[in-house]
Amino acid sequence: MQRFAVGDNVAVSGSDRTQTQLPGTRPAMWDDYGGQPLLASANDVLVSTGVGNDPSSSQTTSANASLGSMQTAAGYSFGSRLTVPTRTLQFGTMSMAIAENSDVLKRLWPKSGLLPSFSGLVFTDTNVLMANAWVPDGTTNAKALFSQAVPAANAPLVPSSGYMGLQKYAPEISTLQFGRVQQDVVPGNRVSP
Image 1 (cartoon, rainbow, N blue to C red):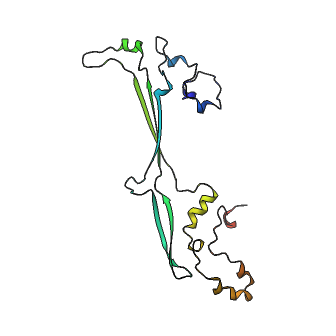
Image 2 (image 1 turned 90 degrees about the vertical axis):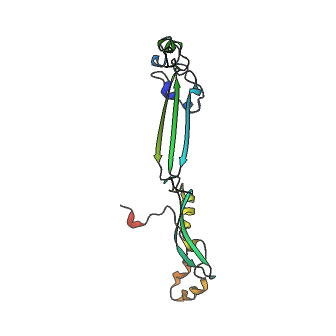
Image 3 (image 1 turned 45 degrees about the vertical axis):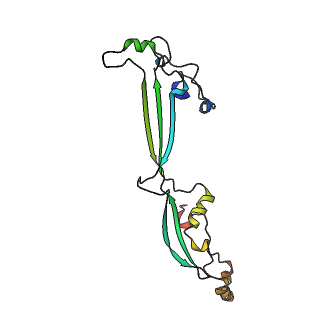
C-alpha cells in the first residue's frame, strides 16, 4: 500500500512493510476534483490470504501414499509411507474502497430515479498460486519426510547377529548403516563437473 499510493521519486524504505498509515504525500491522481483523497484511510485497503485443498474434493490435509509393509527383526509388521500435504492451493485477496465520502463525486452523480447516489467504488482482486507445498522446508524437514519411506530408519529389519558373523570375510560389514538417510547429498553421477 505504501509503494502504491506514494508520490513520485520517493525512495523505498525498510519501514514501508510495517506502516499502518497512508503516506503523507500522494500523487495528484489520488485526489478528487475538490482536492480530497480518494483513498481516505489505510482501513479502506483489506488484504486476506488463505489455503485450500487441491483437489477440492480432498477430505484430508495430507495424502498418505503407502509404499508397502515389511517385517521387523522382532517379527512385527512395519508400513512405509510418504505423507505429502494436499493443501497446495494458496490464495490472496486485496480489496480497495475509494471515494466513499467524496462530496464532489456525489454531486456529479446524485440519486436519479431508481439509481442511488454515488457511494464510492470497491476494487477487488484475487490471485491464486498452486504451490508445491509438499517439498520439505530445510534439511531437518527433508529427513523427517523421507525417513517415513525408509522402513529401516524406523525399525530394525535385520538383527546385527544375522550379519556381524560375516565380518571376518568382509571387514567393511561393521560399517553398515541400515536405514541411513542422507539428506542434501547428491550422487556423484548427478553432478556435472
